[in-house]
Structures are given as C-alpha cells and as structure tokens.
Amino acid sequence: MTADTPALIVSGLTLGLARDRSARALVEDLSFDVAPGEMLAFVGESGSGKSLTAAAIFGLLPLGIRRMAGSICVNGTELTTLSDRRLRAWRGRDMGLIFQNPLTALSPSVGIQAQIAETYRAHKGGTRDAARLRARALLTEVGLQAVATPPDRYPHQLSGGMRQRVMIALALACDPALIIADEPTTALDVLIQAQILDLIARLQKERGLAVVFITHDLRLAARYADRILVLYAGRAVEEGDAGTFFTAPRHPYSRALRDAVPTIPATGRRLAEIPGQPPGPRDLFEGCRFAPRCPNVRDDCRRTEPAMTFDGTRFACLHPCVGTP
Image 1 (spheres, helix red, strand yellow):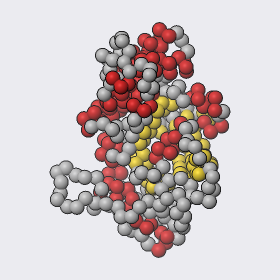
Image 2 (cartoon, one colour; image 1 turned 180 degrees about the vertical axis):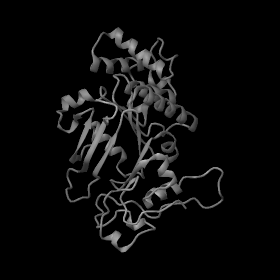
Image 3 (tube, one colour; image 1 turned 90 degrees about the vertical axis):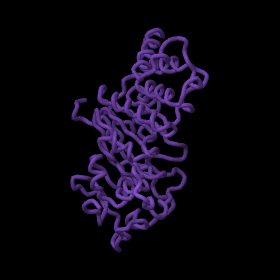
Image 4 (cartoon, one colour; image 1 turned 30 degrees about the vertical axis):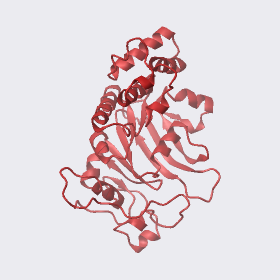
C-alpha cells in the first residue's frame, strides 16, 4: 500500500432485505473511497443508510439484511469474498470500530485493560505481559494515564467520555488501517464531544488512519472531516470537500440539511425544516427519491432518476442549486 492508494474502496454496494426481494434496496449502488490520513463523514437523516453501510464494511449486517451486489476492499483485500473465519481475523486487526454506546459495547465483567489485551493477543499473539503493556500504552495515548495503572478498572467505574476513550484504544489495539466511528459522541456533552473528536483527529493524522465518521451533526462534520458524503434513502446524492459542502452545496437536500443547522447568535427567524418524510423501503416510485420534498422539483425529476455528475463536487440532481443564497 502507498500513500496514494485508498485504504478503503467501496464500489456499487447494494444492500436489501433478504426476505422481501420486491422491496426497494436499503442501500443502492454506493461507491466511495477513503485515503490514509483522510476522514470521510457520512451525513443524512435517520434511515438514510449510514450505519448500515458501516455494518456492511465491518461484516456485521443485521439479521434479515444481505449484500446484494458490490465490492468492499480494505488495504487491497476484497472482504466480500472472505470466509467468516478470515473476516473475523480482519475485524480488530485491519479495521477498528468505535461504537455509539461504549457501555453496551464493552464487557461489564472484564477490566478494560484485560479487554484491550485480549483483543491484541487474539490478532497479534505474544505473551500476556506484553499485551498488558500494550493496553496500558494505548490507554495512556488516549489520555487515560490514571486508568492505565493497576488496579484494572471496569467500564461502570468510568465516565461516558472515559469509556469512549477506552473504545478508541480498543479500536487502535492492532494498528488498523481503517477506523469506523459510528456516531461516537452522541451520548456526550459538547465539551467531551470536542475532546473525543480532537483525539480521533489527532490519531488520524499521526497514524495515517483512514476514518469513516458517521454523524447527524453537520457542524462536527464541517470541523473534522476532509470530505462529506450525503446519503438520502439509501443513495449517495452528493460528495465533495467539506468546505465546499457548506459554502456551495449543489443538491437541494444538501442545502436543506445545511440550512437546518441552528446558528449562533440566533437570527430570530423560524428554524428551517425539510417538509415530509424520507421514503421507506417499500415506497417504490420512479424518478428522484427526494422529488416529493424538493423545492426545485420539475416534471422530469418524477420520471428520471438522476445519475452522479461531477462538477468539482459529485452530485445526483437534474436541477442542482447554483450559487449560495
């Protein structure tokens, strides 16, 4: 692998319901890549396919959902062709996952040092003492110097922010090439949010990690991500530089998301909202999926599903936004 080779390449990924083949795909024809040292943020409403895509990359799709098509390549290895045993070896070693709720992700009956050490030994081998030293070094690296010293602590003895730091240390245990952070700050206050994301961003740059950051908070995406991928109803509708996304979004949905972000100081105007609801998996129709909610909708939008267009930014819209209001 070279610095110019993407650590993650997803091509044509399509996910659907295993028992209802007539339903619309939950994620359809999704393609993107993430380079070493780069952070790509997934944004979009609930149900747009963000976490489902992350689960597919990690090989942890929920029961009843299957991969119907597409390729997932990490560090040059095609994951979709691996056996379950080989895929388990990849998880934790070449890919790390930071869960949304560390209290449910960590074992309540095992000390945090022991959990990190166990992960390290499972993938890297070595002695128990060496694995313990590795665990303590990682806890120190993520800012838990006091917790890194004996006696071992249990997850319930730590605060929410400390548990999330433990999750980061666990994800880094085997020096992975890719980290997936699935809304890692949802349950934290704004001060701890900033500390956790500053930590992830620092480690990303220092270690050359490729990071997929899933979030509902566009302000966090703007501050930390290099690129933003906007998902709507299982399809990518826009992808581009994070700065461009906020200054000149091309897709009407992207602009609506940006305009819905509260401003400080408040303008006194009613907070912008997107009318209607995203379509469900059984809502089948022709044309653009955003058409029923789009302010730019035309007759051709209801007949033709737009393809991705590249104009400095990738977007899928027949009547894109021009300029910045």
